[in-house]
Length: 508
Image (cartoon, rainbow, N blue to C red):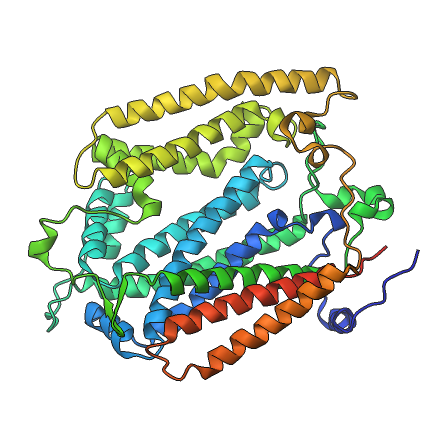
């Protein structure tokens, strides 16, 4: 077998490793089986965070906490590319929350929280909490009628938190008597703006810790029905040496797939933000912020509607007393934080495969279904109490999940344990090779088909065409969303070319 020649980047990283110890230490090579996008969902979250940092810094150049609504309107209606920037930052926040939920759901399904990854799951849960806090703070900063009404309502509800948390929230949000601001803006906006940066910095620190632990553990091995198997790829030395599907790939290939995920994330945000400008109207070349400014008189008549990722929590406050809702919220957070230990010591599951974790999967499906039901229900009943029927429906959802899933998964589990040689759990669920001990051979070989070469040429041609159109746009105010749409297309095209380059050739 021929050994692949090192690229210039690998040689440069090895040179750097001799002096810093980074290459192959802080950053690890990934095995061949891991080159699927579902193994890199965390990279999508990282990309959205970096996107928010950059766009947030640019928005902050024009944001004035003493007059938040006027400065937001000015950015949108008077600054070249300002409306696009505001839309990008707003949709980017949605993207980060959504991708984080997808990432955690995937890791839950494949059992990527099991020993010794418990701390990494807990750090990720803390990261999720910080992300929701950051989104809550950012949602309030434009100081429009809907956002600030929902923000102040949320603060009032959080005063019912037990264990002294209400005192902590009060200490961070209650302000001393200060000279009035000319515009009559709530001085709490200024503090929220400061907290927005502080929490963003905390996200960066916790994210760094999360990545460090991930690099320490390495990518999870492929799913199997084996009991008590090791979750660290370093413990599979024979497979790493002899199994072609476990062969560690050059670090340049890892950088390539990370670059693909980042370009795809950026491109998707650009396309969505350009096609659906966030709370912005386009009328005859006029760009305007459509949300009205916060006004206490109007707020008294406006039902508080939180953003979509808080509707699930808001649902409980609409169903039971604020004190009970706070306890439900904290219990939900505590179960999520400590779930690796619940799985290990309460449910006593001994395999990462979903079929071999019937209690955990049934509980998780119940949570996902209730999250969707509660969010839709809260959205459809603005400003109205739901009553105890809300928590009764939630209880019914969880019971139904267990009655439907737990017996079925237990039956499959017993079949797998009694017929280990003939019973393939994956075949029963339609993904045979993903759960067998011998993973499906992944083809990373150099594509030489005419169709592939033509697709590369077509992509290069489209990039040249869209880039030319971008340079021909001379009005950065009127044409900013067209510019953003073309940029998004370019990012997807470049991500495709990088993916092709990344998968060309393989280390045999």
